[in-house]
Length: 288
Image 1 (tube, rainbow, N blue to C red):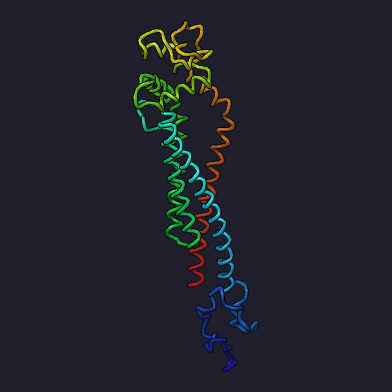
Image 2: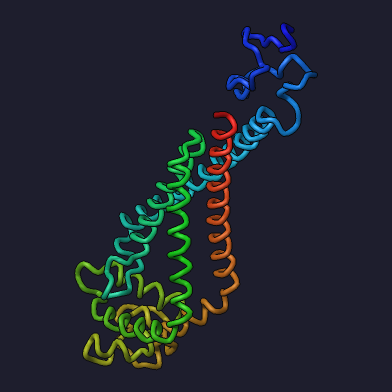
């Protein structure tokens, strides 16, 4: 101690203010525990800097693990989509207006977006990069808002969507069994077999497709070659659109739980991103 001021370990004097080096977390606690300029007292920038750093590290690794799982999930979705595209063609393509709207394409696009978002989140977390963290937050927020908008519009325009969907599906029946539409053909065959139904609104929908009293063999109560040429008494009578709709309503709880879990995961990601972003800003402010 010289002239009423404390000498620090680097030969500087602390009486004139706290040096920036004290805000570095790797430094040891100051040697002096008394005096008017003790920098370890409650509420001082050094303690706040240490607390911000510890909190930042905790959130950092939690967000990294979260986004790593997010990225791995995207890899899995993308892999399933590619497998469907390679092995099943345009599987589950029922719409004639949107031929690219197949299960395979939807999974590929979804998986790609999830992978990109997860990758940005991982790098932003591990590097503590404010730009990447903010980009992750904005991308996830946009997707969340789009999903929310789609759900709201679906419930508002349910009747119009029902009418348009049935018309579009009936148009798609004319592509059944044609070249280049193996995905649509397979999808209708699977639906009619598994749900024990025939046609969109009635088995007579197929009469316009074949221009005769005939249905695909997948409409038969007991499958056999060319059984679709037999009498209507050997065919399923239930309309596929209403049958699938009823099935969805019966499994509404499972659909709701899936949607809720998806929303919670996205909200959790938004919370992690914004919290870590704020902690990085605080750490920069306290330790500047």
